[in-house]
Length: 197
Ligand code: SF4
Image (cartoon, rainbow, N blue to C red; front, side, top):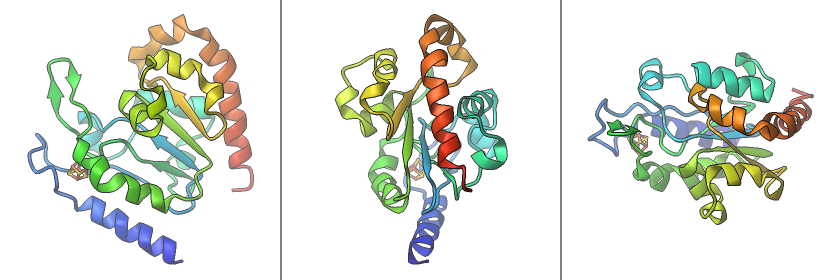
C-alpha cells in the first residue's frame, strides 16, 4: 500500500512538473506506471501529435508496437501491467531534422525516482538511441541495428527494439531476422508474463 501511495504521489508531482519552462508547447508530461507494472517501455519523448492527444503510442507506431507484443489497447494502457516511461516526458519541440532530443532535465529529475517505484518490472523494452545510452550504456558504441541484433546479450530482462514507426518499414524489410527471431520470443514472453492477470 505504501508503494502505491508513493507511486501515485510521484505521478502527481510529475504531472505538475514545469522544470522545462521553455518548451515550445509548454510542459505536458505523458507517462504511465504503477508499482505492479511488469513490462517497462522506454521510448524517446512524445511527438507533437502525442502531446496534443495526451496519450502515448495512440498512433500507427503504437499499433505496430502492440502487434509486436501481441496485446490489445486495454492491456497496453493498463498501468497495473505496463509502465510507459520515455526518456523525456514532454514534447521537446522540432529541429531541422525532426523532433529535438528528449530534455535531459527530465531523466535527471525523475528517472531514478520512477524506476525506484517499478520494482516488479520483469522486462524492459528499450527503443531508440537515448534510451539505449541511459539503460545500456555499454551498447553506446553500437549502431541501433547492431544493438538490436545483440539481443541475446540482454535477454530476457531487457530487449532493444527499433522504433515501431512506419518510417522504419524499410529497416524491417532489410532485417527479416527481427520478425523471424525476436518477435516470436517477445510474444511468448509477454504471454507468460500476463497469463495470470
Ligand atoms: S520534460 Fe520532464 S523535466 Fe521537463 S517539464 Fe516535462 S516532465 Fe518536467
